[in-house]
Image (cartoon, rainbow, N blue to C red):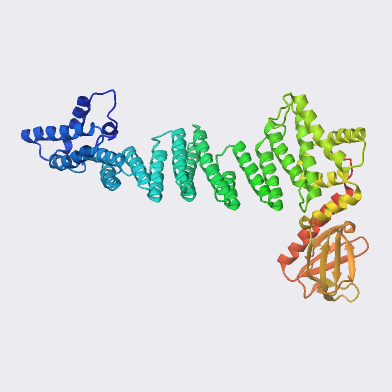
Length: 556
């Protein structure tokens, strides 16, 4: 069959054309679908279709529905069933039945119209999308909401991949349908709809990125509206999980998806991290809160210029949150306070070092100088509340900190945190902070074979690494060590590749080189040997930096 004229000219009956003009256009369009092309049949064709189309312009009523049902039998005698005019008449019949709450008749007519449109124009055509929208309305009215969601998503997919609607229009349709589902107290169906529409948008975004790569940057594809609509669906879905179902983990998964999508603007990714952090914080998940603060700042460092408003805003958010977490009875309160100070100090340095200064919208300051004063007040307050110092001493300390630190140093979590632990707290409180960090410090225990220096024989011992000390015991049941070694005194940790007889039968050997004696050890497997060497080196580096940390920073 020859390709049909798009049905959109039949559905709309534009107000700029008269009824007679519309009927004449429809008669002309459907001539190729006439059953028998004779002079007498053409007259019948014109009379029957004119009669049917005029009924469509009548006000909706039971009589109109009856008349349309009756005339359809006549129409099918002059044109084939799979014709544009039959699709149109069935569409109008379905809409009239919907408005008269004759939902069964409405669904039957709309589904029949849909099949005709799929045959004429294809599964993903705008004509099919228009009919799907009608079916959505009928299904909602009939309270068949699950079916309505499936129809809505199919229509949405047609509109996205066919570019039949703008992303602003698509966002509006999603919002309206979501509101309808929530009015019917169906949050699960609203979430299902948002999940499926976001999947469609993700597919379109991926296609756009791939198309851009294939064009080798010759023509920039604007995906801003697409990204905005996709973000809206994910954020709405997260909001429903959070406020309607109280499922914080599902809420976080929606936000985390935003951080993994290609093509999403960095500012929106940053906002998603803030929402992840805030959700974990509300749930009292301290470890996850701190982990995502670190991820957020890693992303900000990678995507934003160091001396920029965007970087300063990210740091300010993290500073406020860690300060608030330090006020709670968290297991890492002292370290949280240090991180809050670190982020405030880094924000202050950016505000001071950015040419022309910056103004941060989240601060009650409308000038660069006022912004710097507000940030400095925060730094001084934290110092004053944690050290027995006079105000002028605190001011001098802040001046010194600003003078000898760099933004890059403050963003280096381990080094700057240890430095500030000593700066912020007296020694005995700094030790308490170290105990808070115990789970994150390098540590390990397990069996290793030790080479006896005199007898040149191997003996299995139980080794424990705690802070900067490596102790070994006769067994893991003993409480008194047979020996102990400070990692700070070790010169190097090396794999032994020698095939000397004294190493036999051990094959996975390594040594801790000490100025006075060398400790030769062996693990059961190469993997275990590598694990011990890695953790010992990490511990050695950490504690060397800790004990060497002072108020002078090399290269600052």
